[in-house]
Length: 88
Image (cartoon, rainbow, N blue to C red):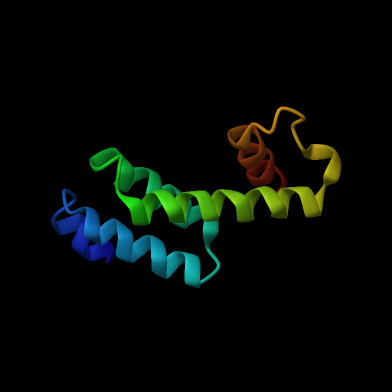
């Protein structure tokens, strides 16, 4: 899927395939990034939207589990992800 995106980055289906593979490998941060890139091409793609929500929830849960004090009281997901990456 990575090669397919490299050869034709305009095909949303390649982003779907890669994000699913990454999610199944438990690489949720990478899957979320691929979803976000695919959603730049088609902001209404139902598979990418759902996977993006799922990955975001998994990341938020990991951050909360690792450090409950790191949770932003406003629930700002981007802040949570930044804190997760900084901790890693």
